[in-house]
Image (tube, rainbow, N blue to C red):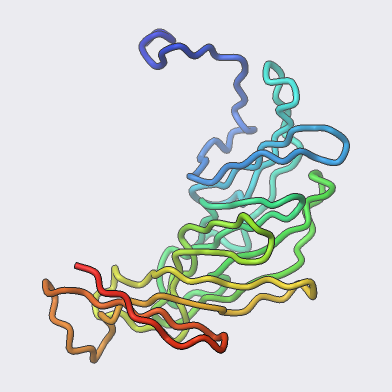
Amino acid sequence: MTQTDLSKNMRLLGHHELDGFGNVGEGMCIQLAGDGRRVLWLAHESAPKNVTAVDVTEPRNPKVIVQTELPNRDMRSNSLDLVGDMLVVAYQTSRVGLPTAGFEMFDVKDPAHPRSIAFFDASGPYSRGVHHLWFVDGSYVHCASGAADFKPRQPKDDQFWSRRRHDTSNSTRDFARTTPTCTRGDPTAPGSATSMVARSSSTSPTWRIRAW
């Protein structure tokens, strides 16, 4: 196919094969580094790579700055987000019950040397960790995630919205979550209206959301 078959009103400026690891997932974001460079961060759909940083300051000449490795091959990091120099990467395992499921936070002030500053563990006997996340204010990570204390009725319903708070001590905690009540032992029958309960660890009361 020609370029006109693939795009409209767009012109290809540059291309990089990412050193043979082009299995990029849904996560990508642009960092304006302290030295003025524009750095494109990419998450990978499958092992062995975790994230790749590409200098795209000159779009016609992109350059790989760094590629990092996943802790193991039974996981992926296809989602990420960035605020300033803080990068958050989702970790989803290939099956439930494996460790390293959750998300990791990195200081990327020096893009060539990402420094791990925090890890939120979402692993559990029925959890695959975090599939997708959203991080825009530097304090809260919103994510689709499993949890150690969540046992779904249907195995594919193992992820739900949750919000994790990150503080200046570089620690994270479960601040709020919305979990479907389709858990083991819940009376809600498949096919009926689904109730979701939002729980917060703050002093605010629990609220309930009805969804059909």
